[in-house]
Length: 373
Ligand code: SAM
Ligand code: SF4
Ligand code: SF4
Image (cartoon, rainbow, N blue to C red; front, side, top):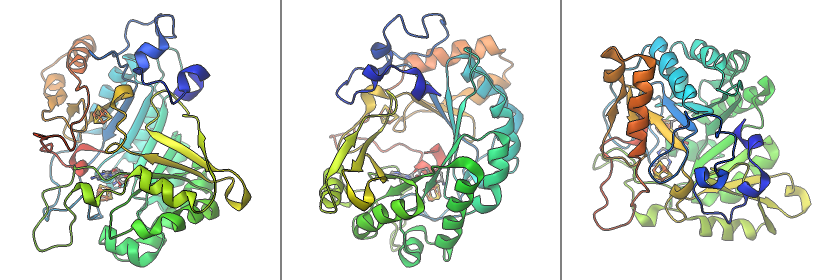
């Protein structure tokens, strides 16, 4: 996995240099000319693959519209081919996402196929999954056996009532909790739990989340709300993005510090997006809390991510205003080398950063559920 391959010095949080520059020219990729590097010197090693745009939740910060997310889904064989081309270009980590990836038929088979891929250095992929966890109790074991390395479960409240208010699906909390426990039992632990905090909805739960992390032995990640929701339907409780709705990293830290002294933990790898913290002592000493703060503390300068949507578009940034039609390129008959050249060219144009909160910021046409978070 990438985290074990980077020298400790390159992991220090003070470095703002892009990942490719941190590694220098004598790093492990000097032997490979295949690495994907953008025009800002960042090396792209992480691919997020959306396997469906469908979802069984209606989280009020994500599926804020009324329509069913539509759109095609690539056949599994096409995901497999594209993934193998990306891996030959230096992608080391693949995260399956959606929509809700557990709704995708054939997910276990796809996981097994990706689990068989090897990097140019002969290593297995770091193969992860982000899910709402609703169907995880049944699928955790087959996914682990198919080669999944780890799982992140989105959980926006630690009590049933608030959970239903945020996801707008009754009875979900107990199912997701069972899914988290099944994943731990299947050897996919420690499970990471993602929580998007929304002012006025679940921001009262920060302390309860820390206690939940201790009790359930999960790693916690609070994520700042980003302007990636669907166009909200007036008259519903769907939450349109505004800066006031964002519960910022500083605010979260202030609340956590009231529970006990916090210590900053070093990033686990150079493109880590979360600032990680632990409690200095006492009963909470084994709790790890990360804060992913794209709005108040952007981390674009060491972004290592690309995204493949469920309809075969390559997105170079979450906030891209254009898609690149990789599926059309593949179906036009391009061989693997042709696809590699096409991908290299697209990746060179990766956006330097997002412009949230700046004058002229344009919300992407695709929402998070259609991109793959
Ligand atoms: N349905 C799966 C789930 O919820 O885990 C996978 C897809 S979901 C789009 C991936 C992640 O994006 C989730 O952790 C979710 O909380 C997060 N997310 C969705 N909309 C967001 C937004 N507007 N701002 C920040 N995070 C968001
Ligand atoms: Fe579905 Fe995930 Fe979006 Fe919630 S965050 S609506 S579970 S895609
Ligand atoms: Fe990377 Fe774009 Fe996200 Fe910044 S906004 S971290 S450049 S995907």
